[in-house]
Length: 314
Image 1: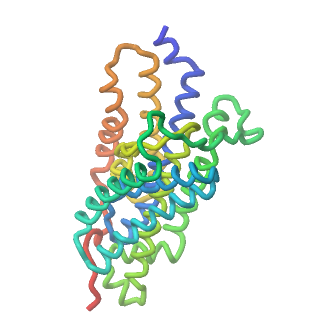
Image 2 (image 1 turned 90 degrees about the vertical axis):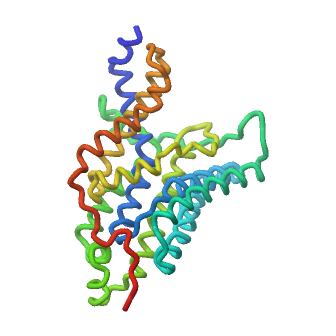
Image 3 (image 1 turned 135 degrees about the vertical axis):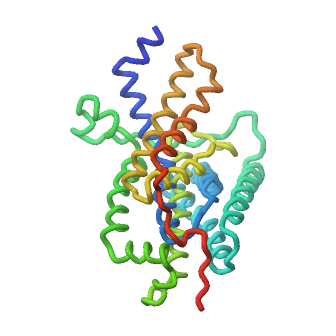
């Protein structure tokens, strides 16, 4: 009976619809990191920035019940943490790997401390309403495709619209070419009059803003959502892998994020069916499958030449 449900049309539609929704946080974070790395800065603090964004969004939503304000708070919180990373790595020229990892620990400590400070320890965890689904007229009624793509919350629509916009910005505009120049050869870019420090600061802060928004979408992606210190659950690290898989291209990042989201949705639903597979294996499944596929197709990925290398104007 369980296996019949697993291959039914209703199950597949629900699976793909949930996969699209679960792909959103990691896709938002990856899109921002593409800008950061294209400018020549490596940000390993995405996990912490997502967590801070998630916590800030939850806290503002809990006290104000204003979804728009909560999303803005999450995005700004990620941008603030990213600004710290930018100062340390660009102005102070410190090790970018150490800075990013340190920010992850700092973010985890701050989120846990302020959560307990503001809300204490409760037997029943506090929850927020989250985002309602918004069915697009006519498109949402298309058989099979409609419920999957056109019956989602507003953040999902917003994220998927960003993909072609960011692709166009990076590959078809002068600003995108400047970012690439700074990431490939900052000295040559500086000689041409491009302000390397300004471009890198802008890209790092923007990447943090997108990571914070990714955390915000995780906090409000479902109704009755609560906050937990480990709810990001490695999605920041997966976003880093996804950037490499995408070869710093937003369109390819979309494909990788959907792979992770659908696999994550699958393990959740298979657990509910109780078909005899250990839940420990199922919890591992989305990360293992995504890593295997992404690493397999990313062997020839060539990162920006100056990524991770501090720039000092002579």
